[in-house]
Length: 174
View (tube, rainbow, N blue to C red):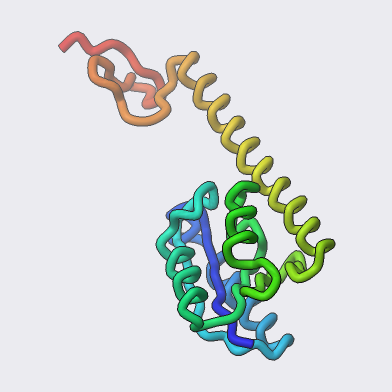
């Protein structure tokens, strides 16, 4: 069976300082060797969130499945593919239903050809979506707290300037 591998990291910092993409790729390559899959290509989305399917690498992979370049998509972990239950449903309905393409996850060992496998896939994606939402809530809460304390949380807005302490903002009448 011919497979296309897909890897993803969320931030440019992970791309520059991390080894996550190479670690994902290495695990996928070993998985393909173990299961005697022909690895056609490895496609990555660097610094792209899984909150949407509109990622150039993922769209390329899906197009290549459509034209018959591979029979299967292999990901390191499901949350590298999507963190949205709705998007997972769209992928399952459009690509990974019985008789079309297969989806494999190295870590979760998912089999989308069985009802149990699809149930497990849906549960794990629900957890990934919850995780993404919790992270977003924590960041939003921390940023609001910092703003209430008068600390800078981004660009310095017009009419303000940075204090000498390098943390707080004060009005800049000039």
